[in-house]
Image 1: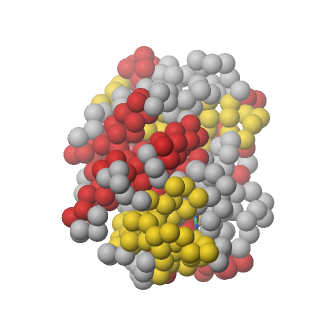
Image 2 (image 1 turned 90 degrees about the horizontal axis):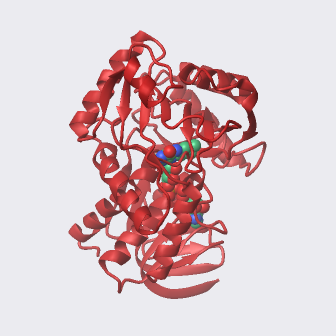
Length: 403
Ligand SMILES: Cc1cc2nc3c(=O)[nH]c(=O)nc-3n(C[C@H](O)[C@H](O)[C@H](O)COP(=O)(O)OP(=O)(O)OC[C@H]3O[C@@H](n4cnc5c(N)ncnc54)[C@H](O)[C@@H]3O)c2cc1C
């Protein structure tokens, strides 16, 4: 065990949140010494490199939430950063469509949330929808979001990692954090002494927070996102097409997305996972995590805040490709069933369940004291919001005179 030289900040996690915070800290004060630790051999190995790559506009979230405050701003900040670093961002816009007139009420709710959140959207007729995206189908009305766009998540994380490294941040890979005490971060091989710890460990953020006496009311419920690519000609469609979500749950439903390279992709599912990095088969199996999730799921299933049984009943069948395809065809009927031969990379959401309130947490949660700050429940759209989240956190550190 070696002891490393002391730093101002140790950030745990080289996902988009950890790197965006490093970027904000070093931009405000270039003389800070900042160390980022990640257990993997590269940045963005988990959610930040495995998502849909959509820069959300910010209209889904209830106006009092942090998500509402930070997504519209995050969309702009990330876009500006990517433009500056010449990373392509494709301005596809997005349409949200309904498959039954009972869902129109939710479209109106989303439009009123957009207005409250200062996000530009409009309700459009079937005729206007066919002009914007002729392949999408709706029932009477749809919602049009012009500021939704898409970028390649791998390209984004690599660019962010390179930017922070060139500004003087040290990123150490293969450093799994085992224990955090006030001013010390212990990995398997080293001890890092620091002024302040920032925990941006994604699927393990709750575990690290609990070592610092935060987040004891949460348990991680991993939800798996599967994708399929459609082998259709370039230009097959030009917009992102989403269904109306069930606003009682934090998931958006299987959508038809266009990647930054113009490929058509369907997904992601929100299938309950049984351990945190349960990507495929028995990969990364952990008996302890399996036992934890088996204890937590019954509490979720009996929660009065979500229609959890319906969610579970709808999600598990999506392991079958034809079920996912037929859901996507409700949004875009001309998607050929035979076109889906290639799976996308599986992503897993770091979704927290509050055991005291018996509900899934819907918002970002940030807790901390003078020794540490914990980024909990960094679920979608935290990728979009990352740079605004970072500004918010660093301003708070300044106000608390940690910085
Ligand atoms: C399927 C899916 C689709 C999504 N689509 C979108 C989208 O289109 N738009 C959007 O805005 N958001 C989307 N999201 C959400 C977005 O991807 C996440 O909110 C965001 O990537 C979270 O970033 P993070 O840095 O908190 O977590 P992560 O990217 O998971 O990073 C955490 C890092 O911590 C490291 N780590 C964990 N434990 C330790 C430890 N003990 N020691 C050292 N390192 C550790 C991990 O290796 C990892 O690199 C999606 C998420 C999923 C799963």
